[in-house]
Length: 207
Image (cartoon, rainbow, N blue to C red; front, side, top):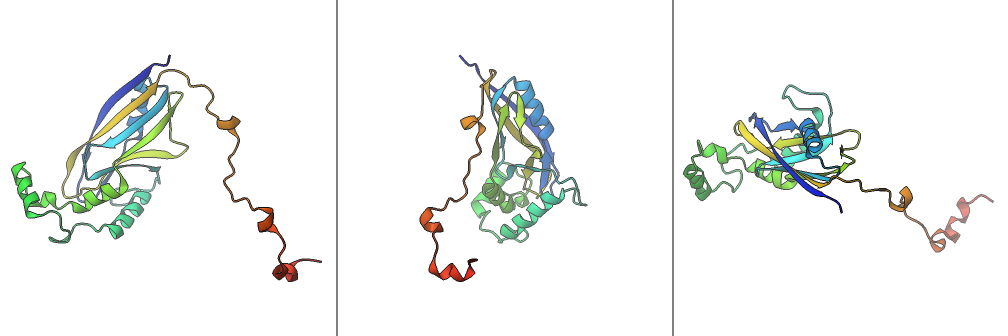
């Protein structure tokens, strides 16, 4: 009987504010998977915050003066076109007067901290978690995958938390290949009727 195991850890991160922050947490996730003792299973990487996301993507290596990798800045450019930065009061419906009062009730330092509607919408659009596969004790990220915690909230520097849950078995799972590893052909297959000759094509055919 296989042993099922759950292993949880929290990563503490510091975002800088003024522009969204992309934290590369690949090294830490790999170390957590190794420490878990789970041999085959999954790891869930989930944001604790409603203005943040988790992204699995290639590291693009080049970094600009905003301290963003080029691919990250390309993504930010696209998100800004879809969901513009919060720049003017009243630009979005949120936050309303009741929400601003709630912010004061929970001791927010000012109304400006609620002017992060762009971060909330980007988080909803982009998603707050990712799940990856663990095979034979190794995180299966392919050849180029890095794991990023993205803090879209840029109104101020903030302390953030990322939750990591590893679940699976400490045992081997045997051969993973489906149908012996046969490659599945999903390309369209034409019927004989679809491939049949048509009188309109005869001029193009060699004789």
